[in-house]
Length: 144
Image 1: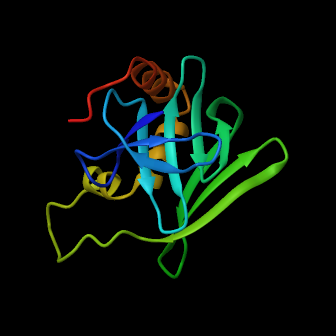
Image 2 (image 1 turned 60 degrees about the vertical axis):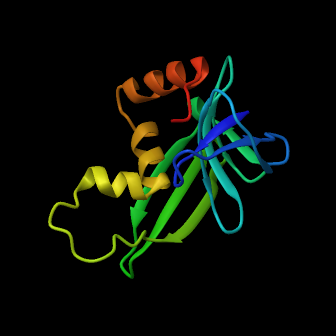
């Protein structure tokens, strides 16, 4: 599965869905990946399913609920819930927006935070974002 790096535009990776391991690649992308310190997290589509994957664990997006929140001490929490309960709780530091920038808004915040972006797309109440992502990712897109 070829994926575009969410944080480093122009970089592409091949994800092995079975192992969660990445290797450099090129070609049409079928989603995005965030390369974390411990594991990669990806949102992508194959011909039939929109997937959310963290490391070697993956979930059909149609069967899970995804949340992202900010804790009182500034840490953010990305949560995946499936039919059995909490499948993943991933605490992570809030991205550093750098020096004060009065033009920094929610679009910039989503661009800096893969988990915030993914949760926003997957928490769409009327499923418009889900359907759009699935259609776009299944068809594939050029990395740049």
